[in-house]
Every structure is written in C-alpha cells, then in structure tokens.
Image 1 (cartoon, rainbow, N blue to C red):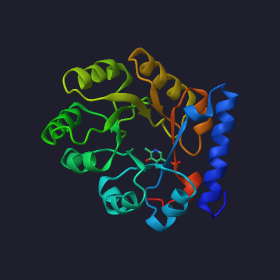
Image 2: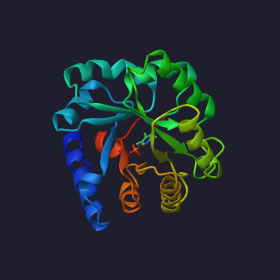
Image 3: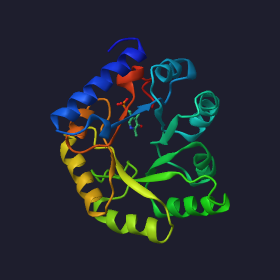
Image 4: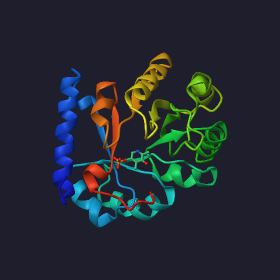
Length: 227
Ligand SMILES: *Cc1c(COP(=O)(O)O)cnc(C)c1O
C-alpha cells in the first residue's frame, strides 16, 4: 500500500476487477464503497478527483461535518451509512445519506418510517438490513433466524425500500461462511444487493456474491486505533 490514496484506489479497483473475473462475474456488478471515516476532506478530495463517487461513513455527526460541503462541489457523490444509527439521529441521517446499510432493529425501522412520512417523502433513502451472522452480542444486526420476519415487517409494516443486506463477520473467524449465509438470506427474501467484504476480505466476498464492498484502510491508510 502506498501513501497515495489515489494510487491505492487504482490498486483496489484492479483487485475488485480481478476477483470479479475469477468469480465469472461482470466487474461492474461490484461497487466499491470507499469508507472515509476518520479521514478529512483533504484526504478524501484526491480520491474524488481520481473518479470515486461512492463513499461510506460510520457516524452521522462526522458525516454531517464533512460531506455537505464536498457534495455541493460534487453533486453526483453517493453516501452510505455503514455504522449503527441511533433513533435520535434518524432525521440527520435521512438528510445526509442515500443508502442506510444498518437497519438493525424494529424501533429504528419504525422511526425511519415516521421521519420519512414527516418529510412527505422528499428524501427517500434506500435501506439494507444488517445481519449479525456471528450472533455476537456486542455487534449490531438481526440474528439470521429472525431475518425473514424482520425484512418482511420493514416492508409490510413500515414501507421501507429494503434493497439488500449487509454483514460484518466476526473478526476471528473465516469470513466465507458468513458471506454465504448472508447471501442465502438475501436470495430467499428477493434481495439483490449484498454489502459484504472489507479491506482484508473483499475478494472472498466478491466470490460469494457481494455487490458492494466496503473498503477503508486499503485506500486511505491505517486509521487511529479507536475506530
Ligand atoms: C471501517 C469499516 C469498514 C472498512 O474497514 P477497512 O478494514 O478499513 O476496509 C467497512 N465496514 C464498516 C461497517 C466499517 O465500520
């Protein structure tokens, strides 16, 4: 990896293309979500200038401080929320994000629907449901066994446009079974999009059907340990 984020971006794009071809998939069927958390506009700008338009953040407050200005300059940027969403930040999140990948509990689905109704549908983000494939107590997400019912309720009760699933496999396990499980849940619920794979395992995720890979450090470099 180089100090130069634009060079890293080109390298990661090449690896995505290679992994897609090896899986006999169209490279264009895999979207790179550049995860910019902890990095500032000066570090993000070269990546935008290198052509990247799809970005992800894990905190609403941080995104609010960084992105409105960048988006004013580059209106075709698409922004995804990939971190946990507190119900008191739903209003900001709906204003800021095009896709919220972390719908992970009924109270959040209900609050999202409420706030969308209040805006008269002026801002209509798309949603992914986060699956806690490892059933880790400290991790957000719906347990695999509850997923079908939850997805159904999001759609039927709350009218949310659920487009896909996202997962973060346990750090100390091989990711492939978790990706495969997420894909299975998506297939039986008619969901086409799969957000899975990060810097360390996006090739494996592509092989198992990922349509969105979330890559941070392989592009921007190492983050401070806290995040
Ligand atoms: C930080 C983060 C990523 C990117 O992780 P890297 O290992 O730096 O690529 C992906 N997904 C989520 C949810 C994250 O919080």
